[in-house]
Length: 394
Image (cartoon, rainbow, N blue to C red; front, top):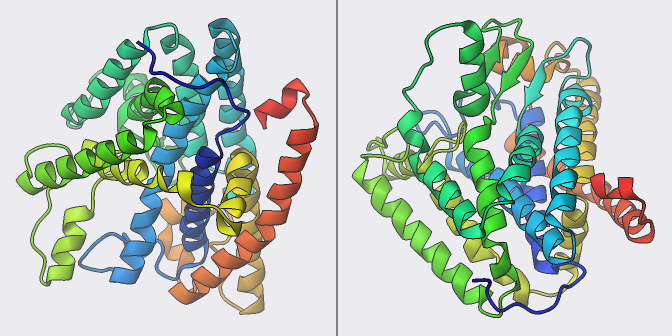
């Protein structure tokens, strides 16, 4: 049974604000990728090598991908609620999904590289696109069935972690796309890198679709607060037991701080049950806040959140161009500035000596947001004035 919900509204500003917050966090993560001296010298979440500041800078950005996938599912249901038939919604999701995959393979992958040929980097936009295509079939099921399917996949997919498909090479490549991730071919000259395999991310989007009516319920704040608390209790309990939910058990470190960092270092690629429990738990606790917060800060976040794809594409080009300019101005090595993802994952020695300190990363991040904001505001105004069919795909 559908919860009691009010008539349709043009937009949910709380969703835009929450999405805007994670866009800002995403920009911080990518600023760290492009600018930090040790971004690829070691895992920023490796308690034995990192610092608390670097660890936290990386860890808080874990919220981004779950938020994007969950809210994309919510937005899909809201389109149906506002009048699109299931057939219309299915066609829209299929076309937009194909469009996002095309963008990931072309415009976005090139933005990370600034060189030709470039490594095709399948990450969050690819995951959203593929998940939308999967959702074209799922939306015909009852929401209770969609909820059950999504929860079973999220809770059970870690049982597949040790599975390797024997047989023809294409089976392994298919498995990489669905669950394990990886590169193809498996050499430093790889043409394709998958860091966001489809199976579990599609389940997160389906979960967003299934729970979307809660966003319109008068009881939404109590529901989200309770869900967030329960998810965090579940995370702490299961993580403490060290028996399931993440392929990397935590261990005691040399210091209390290292032990805490070990405990919270849960796998993102692909996202483990514990990763999704803690990140979705935090997101559910954040959601009610944007129902109450008003002011300039939330207005700015809503601008970013109302044009997420535009903000995503532009910020990659902006940060990469700024990285090259700053390397030139500071006379640092340029060898790793092009085909950046290949260098980062396979040839990190090319990036030696080309990074900056963490305070510089934060300054660049803030400067990028300042430059990005008027562009996003302009595009948001264009979208509000024009109602052509193609605008909805951007």
